[in-house]
Image (cartoon, rainbow over all chains, first blue to last red; front, side, top):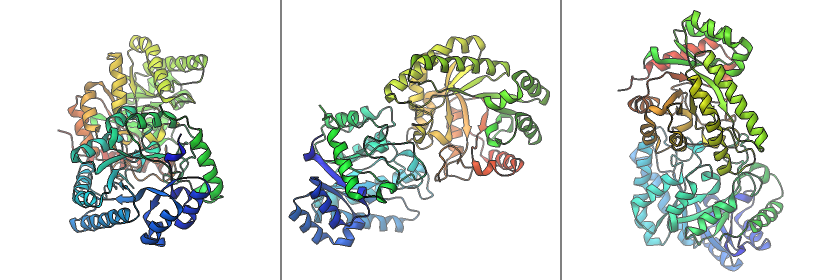
Length: 272
Length: 272
């Protein structure tokens, strides 16, 4: 695949600060980065914007907003306000996309939680539009339903996305979260240019930790090349983000992780 | 829910032999049982048939056939022959249903594995028909895709089922495997009377073991009553099988497990 369209999700090298991740991207010829809010807060948004410019790096997205369901209206309002701040942060570092992890039900029914998510996105959409930031609904693997997201398939994210009919709402196609779905190619095609993010890692039989055991590209069973073909054929023209969340890799040499990640990415046949 | 339509999947009390499970069902007023092949083999099918009759227990299903994908045609034939034997075993104990766990890809692509599963069912269907045993395709939770099933949603199982257009092929609605799906109610309705099994357990945030950490009914977040309403409204009239696979419960008092399971089952509001 095309190095010019490669981005590093900085949690792939989670032990590194934002500064170290920027330097790592430069060292490994990675032209873009997906930024996490905790790392951004440590560094400061204004300094980050300057450092990205100086380094010649683009920002592909900010992780993450979302987590809309909460037991009370007051708590849901707190979540909405946090999302408004996240939109501002995204705009301040030139991130075209804010990734939304929808959130678990927090004791509500799935139907109610799903309605809270729709309401949350509706509440923040005007601000996203004004800021020029695209909201990207990320469906998560169904095993994360009780912890991170009641939106569990690309089909569901697509159905939610079309309700807004806005160029400022899109979906994320993360291969780890969606590959298992027999309808994944059809839903990628249906998403079309509403695909606002394309995330890469791989699936090994999970062994304990549901959030920090993603495999390096090529070490699992996901047909990444096939899914990339589908995503680019659908009209996506953004960056592919390498997002390998793996506690063992975090404990190792982060430069080695980046070297392998870039090699594996470049070895994937270019779509189309 | 109705005690007359309650069945115990014997792996809920896995430490027990078939004999002990039969006695447990009688003691706790459970009128039917889902049998596992390993337990049946220990006991002998003829003796089991006799003991079920003597105890006045019905057999709701035999677990399990399936696991059709394999790297070579010869290995796939071995799997098919094992399924033919499973059909015979089901018939010999009066089990109306053989549960099919489809199997993982075993190195094949998901598309090829799915084709192997369709071919496997096609190969055993005549024998199932002759034996009067219904084959029940069980979609498993997507987290089990690399270990147990590339068929990961009820929609996918329904699509496969309708290809056969046979009363001897149905699907299993196991709440643990399908509750996360935003289309679950629609797919239950679509399945209609092709629902050949209804399995009950609950979902807690998984904590390590993907196959032995199912929660007791009522201890998780699944809307069992809602799904039961949908399943019975779709025309299902078989037994609801309690299938709580939980290593901590296996290490405890099996009678206590059964007592709780029956209590929780009876406390679920009767559908419709």
